[in-house]
Length: 108
Image (cartoon, rainbow, N blue to C red):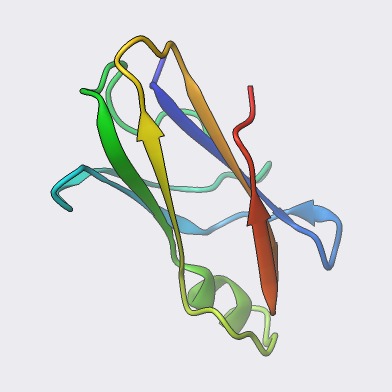
């Protein structure tokens, strides 16, 4: 199982946000993995099953998602920076998305 997973929900429609490209970047900004959210808005396998401790980033390509639906939006991308601890078993990083706001949390 991938150490990092994500789930994107479109809060304006109350549905999963499918088709969003996501990149996982390492502590030095190096590309580690990428994927696209499935019909349930999830990416279950995003990178390796272990990572060194440090700060990582998930970059969500939100402009393409909203543009493909002809929805005016403010954020062309959403970047979430979070810390991976050496002892962690799994990080689920959900994104709650709307055209003019977003929020996140560490899920389980």
